[in-house]
Image (tube, rainbow, N blue to C red; front, side):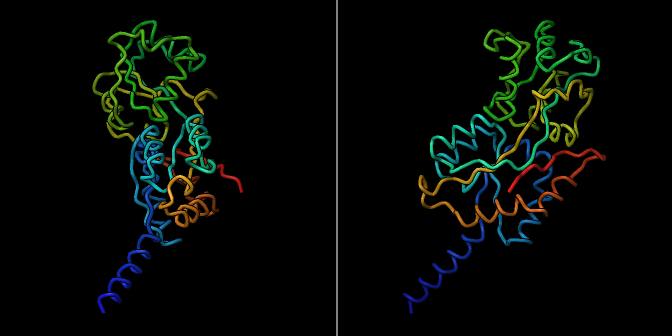
Length: 265
């Protein structure tokens, strides 16, 4: 009887595990509010309870390397490709995109409204040493910001106190920028969903360099045999479905679309 009870408990535990998975996602994705739309639909359609670990891209990749999650959903292509090359994911699959924007005080002391490119925008900020908030957390947004400074031929290491790396997620970083009337790079979805704009405004956007692709990477069972491969595959199949496309493309805030679905079969 005891042996039967133990076996029955194990079967129940296995069933519960098969119907749940851990997914590391970026703070920018979570702050957009889209997860509140997708997760109930995922549960209803494929009966998987997706447990989100909301972190920056760098931390999400570390969780994947450690085998602490079954899949990751992030937005830093070079880091994702390195993750795959190292064998921690069999591939990366692009799901959707939006873009980054440069936000700052409405009086715009760096004159970003006159900038001709993202690089020019950052050069203008550096020239007048206007306060700038960096996430400073190895997230996808932080990695993009550093790449943009490099493209502008500017060395972050040489900046003085006007440049503040806060080591925080997108929402917290936007709050810091709002409180200090500082410039900041944000993803458009987080900015549109941000409720504490104060005197901040979107000042520069629409440069191809600000393109922001999100991708799904299942953690490799070769590296971590315990990962829930079946659930990760089922979630991937749902994320590239017509239902997911309609929900992603249809998600708006104040009439503005936040993401565009671009997964392919």
